[in-house]
Length: 86
Image 1 (cartoon, rainbow, N blue to C red):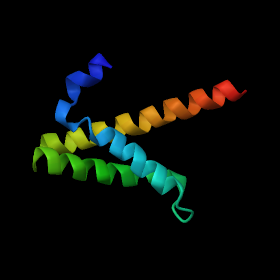
Image 2: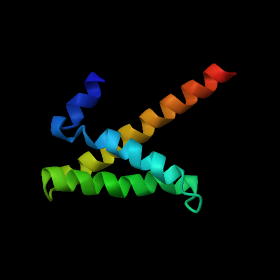
Image 3: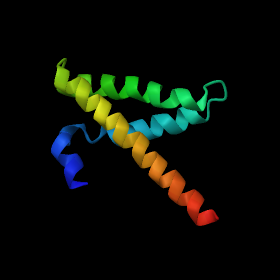
Image 4: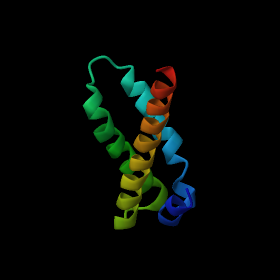
């Protein structure tokens, strides 16, 4: 977690749980395929960081990193839960 904090701005951490919630909502939508969810979250992540940080290249990179953190943490939780069920 310490390495992640070196790359992400502290004020942008709020975007990660927001992306997780948006992902859960999108997952419940039957006409959106699962493989599209990370791309949709990427758009939201970049838009959110642009809104928080401003229109800079760093904001776009922050959005990409934040989306990666959200998707990665979701997969960790999901795979750990599935492993415990076996």
